[in-house]
Amino acid sequence: MVTTQQSGRRCVGVLALQGAFAKHTSMLEDCDPDLEVIEVRTPKQLEMVDGLIIPGGESSTISKLLDLNDLRQPLAERLDAGMPVFGTCAGMILLATEVLDGREDQHSFATIDLSVRRNGYGSQLDSFEADLLIVGLDDPYQAIFIRAPKVEAVGSSVEILASIDDSPALVRSGQRLASSFHPELTNDVRLHRMFLDTCF
Amino acid sequence: MAENSNNTNQTATVRVKRGLAEMLKGGVIMDVVNAEQAKIAEDAGAVAVMALERVPADIRRDGGISRMSDPEMIIGIQEVCTIPVMAKVRIGHFVEAQILEHLGVDYVDESEVLSPADETHHVDKFAFKVPFVCGATNLGEALRRISEGACMIRSKGEAGTGNIIEAVRHLRSITGDIRAITLADNAELFEWAKKLQAPLPLVQEIAETGKLPVPLFCAGGIATPADAAMAMQLGAESVFVGSGIFKSNDPAPRARAIVEATTNFGDPEVLARVSRGLGAPMTGIGMDDSIKFADRGW
Image (tube, rainbow over all chains, first blue to last red; front, side, top):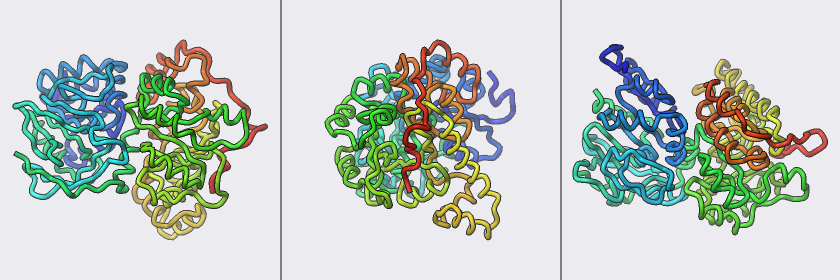
């Protein structure tokens, strides 16, 4: 495995099977010009990264593509080994222990002790933006929720960093972050910085 | 413990409407005519389905007036899908759009594939909470649609033909003009706006960012995994596949192969693997002797 220790350059990946991966990539690059940011589509690319963002998209499609691209097992192993990870929207669903209203053939990694309901806030007409108060950030964060998953329960190991209408919207468990909203749809890099601080 | 945020929620903002298009990037949106096809599409990894009564190849064959689908059929598809459901309205037909919004579809396609309802005006898309996708054959048309509120543009191609040539022409026209605009000086941007018949601020925005302000997808004529990958390599951010899947001999494996090709569009090894043994693609239909859908739209 080529990680920071060998290459000398820190490397963060964005899972690029489907969804809003390009925006995450450009925001990570904005955070730190010295950071190497790569799109991850293959097991070899996954081996290179010290941390990973799993972006928004359609969780059932991404789950299927994890199998088709032979990434399911290697990603499960990296997550079990404690690789820092940030799952946004569909990414949060993929990190959860329990998915309600999902498809039977959609599988998550049970990385963070969370129960989430797919499209829990409703259809696109119910999608919304809101100012979130986030633990550790001084000013409110404009969060965009698109057909977002709703967190219905969290385990005792999970820290709730922000909530919306009494539902957790940003959670942390060790070096793992998950949001039901899309930090890549604004130009506010504070959560990407928070993730990088968690990684290194 | 986090403080609870509430009472500030805003729906249907531009970012929220464009945001769903961002989530569909790198994916395949498939035309389906019933719940059974919708299941096949979702099983294959589609990111969204387009619910319509007849796929474009059949509309082309049957002729006559084609309209918004029966709400009953759209509801039937919504009930079996976990992915977004889109549906089409005729160009300018704002009442069909009101009906689809009421049904809670996730995206409305103001589509040249249906018979136009208005020969001058498109729908005022800012008047709706539901986001719209519109077709375009060139950059001017794309920018006019965006100025009317479209949150996603798809290059039109020629739907229902199984022939990629028009999609390639339209994609190249849009991306080529975008590249040229990024090299233009300020004085030339006024001329570009005039030539494109498009609002100057949008032309100036493209000069600055080098891309459309909304996602650019490709439609109209994609029939094989190689077609999908070609569209992606030419700058499309997702693909719509209409007749190409359910007019082929064996839809399910072809649907999955096109999904894989769209994700791995730059990897010939994957493209070669997924292209093998798919059976016959849809039979192409000649464009010369039939109407050109792409000419609809103003």
